[in-house]
Picture 1 (cartoon, rainbow, N blue to C red):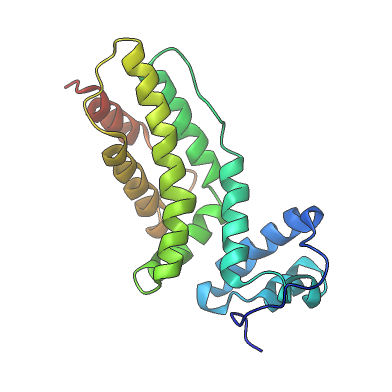
Picture 2 (cartoon, rainbow, N blue to C red; picture 1 turned 180 degrees about the vertical axis):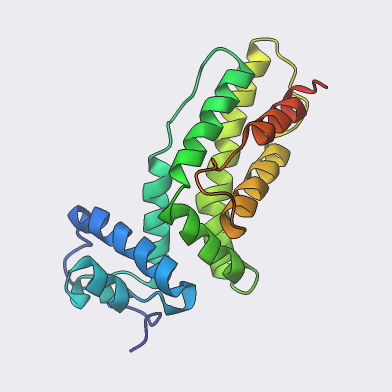
Length: 196
């Protein structure tokens, strides 16, 4: 039986209490061995749980999706500093903190696989791109309600943000340097507000 074969529906449900250990294991195995060698068996061993706990109840894609959902769930539901610039600076600061370390390294490990794996591409789009776009939609809608001018659609800004994230996670940058530099943030804000 391989990692991706159909799993019988019997047995007790997935144990949500194991999620922190399993999420940690998914990130560790992914960073250390890459997507191709990420298996439920390897995750179970790293998490210190029985293979049966995962093997019949979670495929590799389901483990990745659950981990991505946990990461996204840590993002603030809403940001309201009273200005578009303030909202964007706080939003990007949180993104930078969230994607530092193993999470960013895991994203880099997945980036190379996306072009060859439609299922993974769909998962990445739903787990990272869409939540970012939706969050930016909220920020921009509030800005327009305040009478502020927004010079770029949320989807275009999401492309810029995701491009910066991938550039910083895939290509090494100076030790201690933040995911988004001051120049990066200033450039994004000018693009959004239409200021020169």
